Length: 296
Image (cartoon, rainbow, N blue to C red; front, side, top):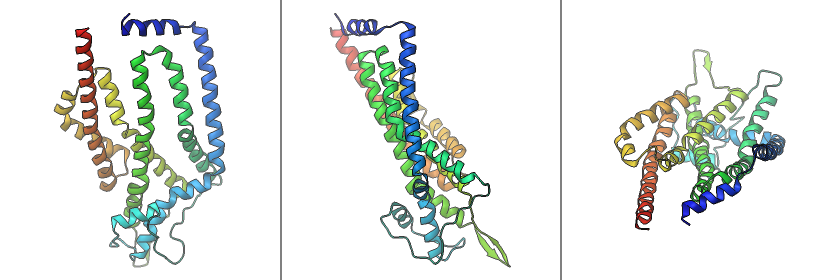
């Protein structure tokens, strides 16, 4: 019996009536919903500390901006800003509050905490959601497909966290620094940044989701390569078009400033190069497997 015959036999043995599949799907959905609710309650209970944690990049930018004298001509070392956000460098001591966020609707901060808890619940419950998804689809996969599916479940959250970390430690401090630098005070007229809690949270959420999903590029391209829908040769020949597409995506999903756009374009171009090597490795393994099967 060949390897393909054994795979077909395993799939045939795992077949079940439609009602059994629906019952299993219902059970796994109940587990996913329960995991999300538990994670949501936990995140909502700590919503304020989580919000303070997310405001730290703004606080670091505001502290260094105030220490540099404020205004559009204030300068700061990029390394100091990153280390200050990471807590590896003490923030400059300034008089009074360095960050003051407001809310203008009675329940605005409550809804903001609920949105924050929802985002945190999805991230916290992702291992349970991914495991339930894998357990549901695994019986319908070949053995080699099951082996290939698991690494992607591990790689996807890791790449998402890397994208979120880039937003938190690098992009947000510089975006907020750039925003603070737009303020001025002349002839009795003052323009100062005073963001709403919901606006800041929407910015953070949008950037984390945008970078997190964009960092899935190697996963998506590798899956397309495994399916035979794309080749490394086509990716190399289309590199210039891919760079243009990356620039367009960066312009759409980031705030309208060159700093944030460049911070997304550079890692995405590097990830595209990584994707080429991933697809190339898959093609090499496929060639060796086909050669071995031909000899057999």
